Image 1: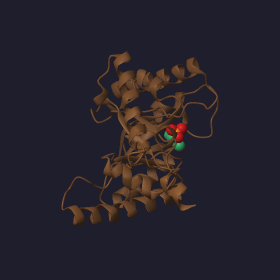
Image 2: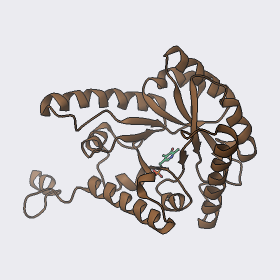
Image 3: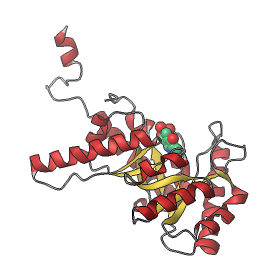
Length: 263
Ligand SMILES: *Cc1c(COP(=O)(O)O)cnc(C)c1O
């Protein structure tokens, strides 16, 4: 009956039971802060990218209302769809409230990218985390050039010990980074990894440390620009370890949306 369903998410006083999404965002930020403290780092160095691939646009809109503006998606079509909805939402909110507190988010493309999808992606994304071949980089460079833009990208590296579907081997990374420096409409601004799914804590730490070392090496010897600055590693199950190992961007989905309606 109506009463039961209507009252299910009401607190006794009539207000909404603690806002689960806001609580989750706060808690993840706290955990990032605690991991920074353990590592002697400033938490301003770490950007939380909220991965919205499992939730609908209603949840994205609530994130924007909470000033969470760094959002990640793993598929081009879904990223483009949500990006268009976000632009409409922001315009509507600005008309309603005559304020600028809500702005369109920065969309991070974090999933495997095929060359034939690059064109559809470029106008929506601010950072592509998943460049794993020269051919893909060349396509991004070409399409960005046509738009008169410079596309910022990360190299996806397989820093775990087992072979994985995506990401270039550690041993090939420096050479590929060097090749990318000659592309005019593409700017390499860092590296990214996904830890192996079955890794235990020492395995995760080894993987993230390996990537952090490679990041320093590429910065010192290949790219030598201050805008080579992003170390994207860590997901819901391992972002604290990643932060302790030097991550500047963590990509978190599940931990933000636990107990939240998927809308
Ligand atoms: C889905 C995804 C994430 C977020 O994973 P959670 O475990 O839900 O936090 C991070 N990075 C990539 C590349 C993903 O595809």
